[in-house]
Length: 134
Ligand SMILES: C[S@@+](CC[C@H](N)C(=O)[O-])C[C@H]1O[C@@H](n2cnc3c(N)ncnc32)[C@H](O)[C@@H]1O
Image (cartoon, rainbow, N blue to C red; front, side, top):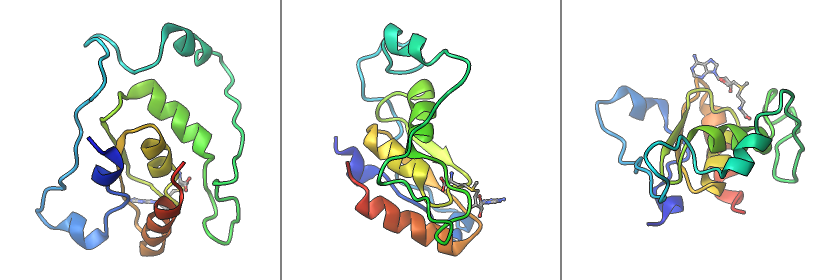
């Protein structure tokens, strides 16, 4: 299954208001046992249990406030997605902004959909997803 093809980067407001269903894959495609809440190994899980999280920026991160005033690092979105989802599942970001969550989800072979009040941020997130393949 090709997750990148199935992932929908962002949805225009008009589409959200309609009664159309989004055709996005959402079922896990890993071999994890049913009682696992994520695909992390026990060792990776322990590493995530430290009280203070530190993040780094990478070149793909949008840090220029002219594009969006409040972006998160991709590494933050990545960590949350890894903690609470399996490969193939669907990540929903109702405040998508520049699309950081969508980029992280795709990196991790998760499907994703994002919403934003502002059309210009929907467009920014679509552009961001288009160029941000790892
Ligand atoms: C903190 S920013 C998200 C930044 C995003 N995590 C990123 O890295 O680019 C919050 C976003 O939520 C949007 N927003 C605020 N209220 C909203 C609402 N009620 N419904 C949908 N989007 C909303 C804003 O337009 C803004 O782009």
